[in-house]
Length: 420
Image (cartoon, rainbow, N blue to C red; front, top):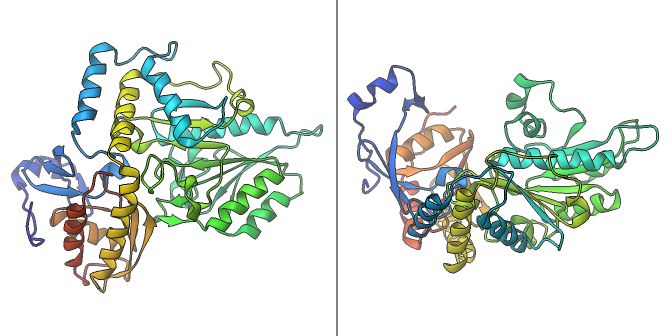
């Protein structure tokens, strides 16, 4: 690890073949990572990095956690995959545990997938089935509402509920009857529900409580509670996308459980990223027996979904989070990180926001991508969801020392980085 934020070197000869096919990130040659341990990862040239991105909020336990490795190795020796024609003990145990952690009522179901996009596809499919039950005799269509700045994935259904035009436009036309409503504007949401111009009733609202890809933007608690009330009033589903915020990242098992993020009970929750500590997994929890019954056998499925290897990885990840108190620790380390960043008095840093260990530094200038490159050169992995925002989502195992080390590097970030 470079000390005092000295730049790291690269083996230009080794990376030359990658340069030939233009594999660059932020204008610099692609870093080829080789292995990790704990909070740190090494590239093929031996450079060491402190990882404050965790595979985009995925590696909840960091790299090569012994409990995780042991669980995966043992399950691999038993059965890695059996297809979705069968259930396995790890799958059943994991579904039971997720329902418990979410506080879902008896009769709730878990539907597994391989990613956050797949999880949201399942949620949208369930919303469409639910919407069909709302149709009146005149067969008016039903609608699904999504928020401006929201991100739910890049598959065609999930993309239809993803707001950013530059991502959506090349693939239009997308799934119809999904409308966007201004985030954090309860009047706008109320007006969308009240629209009576032949569009039909609202079947569901899908929303992130912290809009991660938009720059870690938390929604107001009163707004979230207001949307829940509108859904109740109009008999609509509230879908909470916890792909990035779930599994302890915000200092609660799920963000919806935090009072400062509404403290509400959703109808559907989607999850992925950190649930299996680095193994590809996602899913959806439908709250209650009546809603869950909308998915009959064959209505939804995925070949690899809920495979025993992934389920074992997830059970191990959840077990470590519980035993080591990492949910509460995420709150403590997050507060340390936010306070420490602002205490640097770096003129490039305008503010910091977030919950737990999902945080963003708002910059005074649009130079985020240059800042990410600078940080990488100095041994710190972060990313830039927008030109004026740096996102920090380290593994939940981050220690007080790890936080201080990251703050020390960030404190030295120059104010004259190239703008975008």
